[in-house]
Length: 410
Image (cartoon, rainbow, N blue to C red):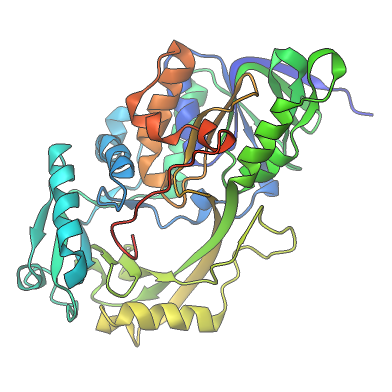
């Protein structure tokens, strides 16, 4: 039997997606001893690896819009804020809505303006002057954000981790996956193969696999007794999380580089330039969810009919896409919560465990603000107001806070 390698840290982070990497970076920047446990090949199809990497503030939930607005300065000033290049490209962003959603559009723009975001509402004719490749039939109004764009998810994640390591953070890779183990009243530890990480705080940021990690949380409570309330709390939190599959594809088209990033709230699709004369567009996939991504699922496989349906949907707005050759298509798994809000904060009944998961596809654009706020909470003990809507305890007390969507497709 292999000997166990013990590591100690102030904070251990389980999950090496962009949220876990951002938290690790900010903890290390504040002088904490932090160890990040990367699941390696055990989580090959996570959201960060397959994200469309949108950077936008417009959102159907004002709390999420606030986190996105707090994150924008980091994306725009990445070389100074983090170092290196995160691949951020400012293309501008536009949200297109139909007649029945115009009041909601104006309300969202007013809220974003109050947060200091540069944004405005245009009528379709005004917007069309700058985007002649688009067919705007059925669009009643357009919210524009000149500072929006997209980034490179691998560059962003790796940039956070590189800077964290420069400041002393340790990275442990567990190719077979990792688990949480409860050690009585001493809190929770991370077991990764032959390594065990003991820390004052453990942050679970394992994306689509977070529910399975919580469901498998093992150990004992006081004097070797079953965990009792801790077990019930872990079960309630695990039940609140689901994995959802999503996809996108790339196509070559000469109109690509003149486009802004677009979410079409009328048709229910999105597309954006991807550099080099390519457009990235949404591939709608079956809406089934799972407690955790199935082990047998190929993860990245997208069928030709699924890609064709996605291209047809986007081509209604971007006619030049109809005959454009598709050069790549992929899919990934993202973590969703039962009420549409992330779980960020201490896990009730599980001392030392802190959750940062369930972002429902919104983790990438908000990672800078989430990483900064989580690190501040863990090291100062003072709660951050921007994280107040996301406390995990709502699922243990039976008081979730469902998002009231303003739009059908955002």
